[in-house]
Length: 295
Image (cartoon, rainbow, N blue to C red; front, side, top):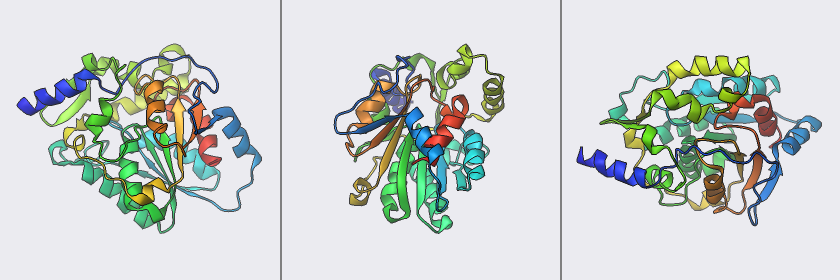
């Protein structure tokens, strides 16, 4: 319990599973030395280009979520002729590994195994917490990566752990909704929709509402043991092409904090989704698909 109290103290100082609204404005993020284009421009490029060969996308979900989060994106990319593999992180989704037995290394390892099984360089995509996972996996397997893509995701610097990275968003009002258990971190259940699927509260979109209804039973507490290992970025990581897809309506990782992370890597290309919430694979799936196709 002493460990949990210490964890809670760190996170309550400033946790980045954050939920503030931001002004939805095209091109609002303009980081110095970072290439920024709008989602509309990226989608237009995708629709105007012909593809000489297909890509292989490996999609990594975020905390609390299952691989099924990606099902609309997977179908859309496959219809365009690409190969898509979703990764189920241990201890989440339909995986039955006890949370107390899951480490950050376990999450990284399953992603690396998936990449190596593909047999060719991949576009590695991570959402939210998945950004930290793909950073380590991409660093370890840099020759096997064509691009790293962060979708409203954590983007750690060398030596940061997830708990340290999460504490960096000082604007986060998330603390009252966190539920600490001995081996897991959870979110107050009546706040899940507000935090992760914000647009469903204001948009009359039955398709989005149905996606939310389908995914909620698959959410589960996140293994706490994945939060503390420092990431180790290799020289190869810094040479990888990186793309950050910033969702400006995100109530789970504040847009300002997203900017502070990707600005640490000035070679990163940034694409903004002005009206997307934290879950663009549900709130703006077609736009996200077109962005990914156009990379």
